[in-house]
Image 1 (cartoon, rainbow, N blue to C red):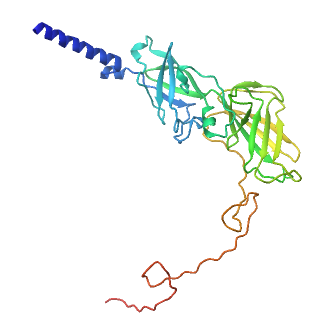
Image 2 (image 1 turned 45 degrees about the vertical axis):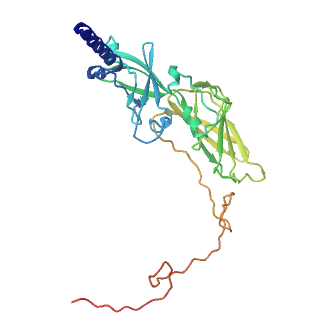
Image 3 (image 1 turned 120 degrees about the vertical axis):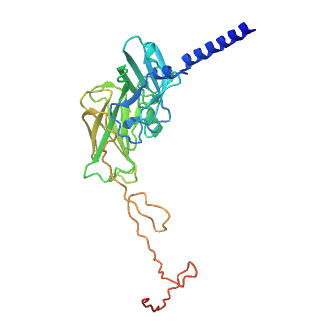
Length: 328
């Protein structure tokens, strides 16, 4: 009986020990887990924005793929870049003092995705899902920061109207054509800031076209339809990952010119885009707003109120004389 009892105890201890090794049940094993931290191009100013603006905050899917050797594991990233996993990598799994790591976002079931963007990026979710991040680096126990860069590129369209154009940029829609790597169409509609995400590619002369629709209710003189102008970028150029490109477009009465003014590293958290604010005012009934940008005069009277007797919410307009003296 004693032998059987000791054998059962030994077997139970063995199972308990194995459970600790496999699941990280001991402090020693937990301490041996690789502690990753994720940053985006080493710029994260703490703003509560999405990855398109270089922050992890606000993601609907915060899963990152981390690959060492042939093994891919799923990690979760917090708003501040801390990464955790239910099945992390451990240093004792790595023979050398450092390791080469490949990582990407989104996780995509552990398979690194190609950069393919959505056509209608005026929808915030489509714009966010068109952003892809990647990282290739070597880590050590002294430095295990994974610095991600954008795998795609961003286009910023700056639009201005010639002084002879009787129209407004209010509620305008900017579209791009001539790019490849679009999932569900051939024309990209930019977001409200006139920005769009595109895949890296080489662009031939006159390949990319910028189109603008001025649909706020004001039109070019003599044109009964919303103003639609388009222009092509005459010079060839190359779209590289991790950069943003500025397109300057000028709308004239009968044409539009577009120039790519160059590229910059995509590391900031905001972009300045020229725009006009609408001129609107309440109509005569006071329950709607003019859509053509014109002001409407509203007739009205202001109520006259004065203090009352203090017995209710009404104000009677009467006054009382009160004598007062100082207390000795």
